[in-house]
Image 1: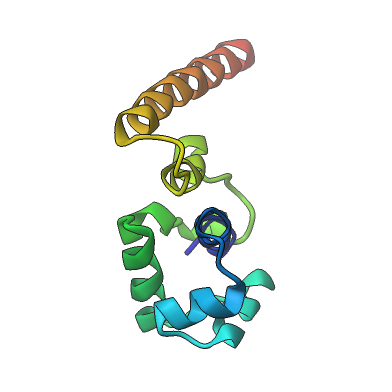
Image 2: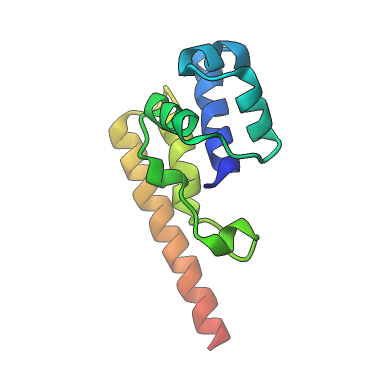
Length: 120
């Protein structure tokens, strides 16, 4: 699980809604210490994780990582990292988020292709 991305998505949504961390924890039905531990990189339990992704209205898969990523060997996909933050914005419609996902995804694919062609 990409705890950093999950915590960032919660923080963005919390800020947009004008909630304190304690208020967010209460809305989620988790302890404030669970969220505090996440700020330090510790994973929430499965029940808390489900409550968080449900509250964010994001699929849990958004925050899944491969085993190599947990050891810092591989960066998460750019779009996967940004989508929770984009969706948490109240000033963006669903169509806006979809458009931004497509634009950022296209740019990321281009950058990757250019890197690969230079290394070949």
